[in-house]
Image (tube, rainbow, N blue to C red):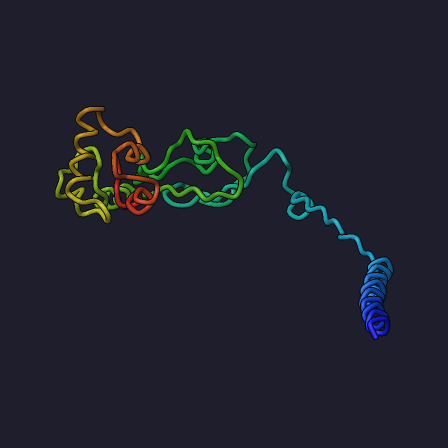
Length: 186
């Protein structure tokens, strides 16, 4: 009886092993015969689309300039260069609304604001170099203690040279800076 039981167990084991081997073989054959396709490589060369040269950039100049529009300039050109090409600034243009020495980037829009618009924007923002505790406290996330630390920092180190320098103040990290940077100015 034990012999029959032993043979029966061996047959069941052999059936499982056979099924596993046949399955593995079927998967291998299927993988070998599966159609192999290569990804097509598409080369994108912008100059073919718009005729622009690799040595030029396109800049859209708007606002208080004599001839606003789209201009092609050599790489490395500055804001002042595109303003000159556009005929210069209008009489009511705010020179301090834009950095004329900044190097231009392809595809950007340069906005020259009027003196009135620029002043309105400045008046709407809180000066981190002149504001008192109450004004700074009105900023989101800035309480009286952080406001006091901002004032203490500028008294000890001189006026802030950039809005990003606020991260040197204890309690102001990148997240808080991103929440307030559009609400403050130097």
